[in-house]
Image 1: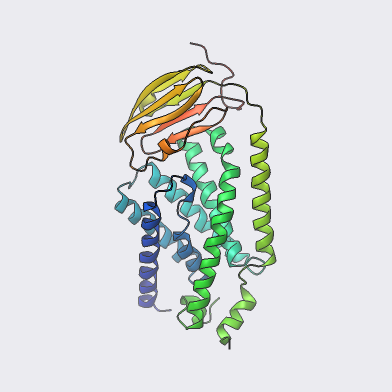
Image 2 (image 1 turned 30 degrees about the horizontal axis):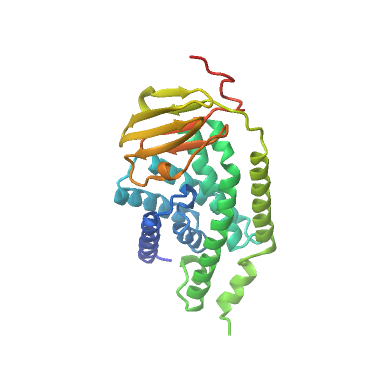
Length: 177
Length: 135
């Protein structure tokens, strides 16, 4: 895929994930662990169709822009989002490499799990100490299971539909996996 | 009817493979087991420790009461303890997650206002905490 097309793709994906992130934040359900579930749909899509580097770019830019919009740039929640998001993206890149046994939902589950665990690690290291953070691991894993499943299924649906219309991402249409 | 691209991709990357199901099951079962284990852990009484930025730290003895106004970067967080049960009464943060986290009473439970740097912890059976706090 040539550079221009790739930039355009990334820009569109960034806009979509940013929109999802902002909308999700506006929903007044005070359960901390439901963060960043929807935006990860785009991350999963990017991991599969564009590769780790692009997905990482997407994640970092999305977190920065979302925090600028929300007024939390460089604040503690920014650190949480960035930590969780980067950890999740890296983990999904690794999962993608292990991909024949693992499918789209599996990659998404790995991402969701590492996102929540990454956030717990950041909170534990910077704010609370090990014990309270460890106590929240089972709940975080449970929520990651739910979020990863839903996110993965939606991402798979999107990939499927776009592919059928020949609009799929960079790699697949040009023959690269 | 499936285009050749999809047919080729399906062979490479499934949607919900067996491995996926295994991973999901493992996560759910493991997490549930963890939750059960936590629920059955001994519930002795523990001191309530409130921490804020700039070294702010207040301790309420187990079963005690007190009201604390904790200053922080975004304003004030009011923590109320009644008979060993702690909750955040109000806070100047935007999302009010801390206020909605409810009441905590068992050792190891935690409420945090991340934007304001405030944490409320019930001391308990933890490796890194003191066994008793004297004043």
